[in-house]
Image (cartoon, rainbow, N blue to C red):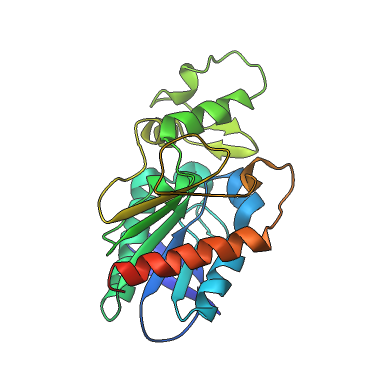
Length: 227
C-alpha cells in the first residue's frame, strides 16, 4: 500500500505491508546506487514478513526515492530525524523494530530492536564511492571536506557534509541487535547465510530463496525480542 509520513522537514512517501496489528518493522535501504539494485529484493523480504504476520514500512528518506528534496541538500542528520519521526508515529500504538541492509545500518531511530544484514562502516562506503569517481582535480581527501560544492559520485550529487558525516559513522551497535551476513563475508556475525551480494551487481536483481531465509530470521528475531 502506498502511504506517506511527516517529519520536521516535510512529507515523504513510503510503502506499507502486512497486518494492521502486531509488530512492525521499518526497513532502511542500502544507500545510493545500492538501493536501486536491491529494492525489489527488500520488497520481497517485506512481503514474506507480511505472510508471517509481521507488518512493515519501507520509507523514502529525504533526498531518496520519490522525495522532492534533492540528494545534495540532505544530510545524515535529516535521515535520522525522518526515521525517528516515522518510528514515533508508528510506535504510538505498536512495537517497532528496525531492519537495515548495508549502509542503511548507519541510520538509526529509537527501535525496540535492530536487525542488520551485511552492515558496512561509513568509511568503507565512502571509499567505494570515491573509487568510482572519474579522475579530476580534487583528490579523494578533498571530496570529503565540509566546504565546497557537491561532489558527483556514482551518478549522485552528494554534499561534502553528508560524505563527511557518513565517513565518521559506523553501524549502530545498540542492543538488542542481531547481525546477519553472507557466507562469503568473513566479518563477525550472529548468523551467516548462503547467497550472493546483490548490491554488487551491475543491474537490479532479486533472490527469492535468500529473501525467504532472511524473512524467517527476522520473524524469529522479533519473536525472541517479545514482538
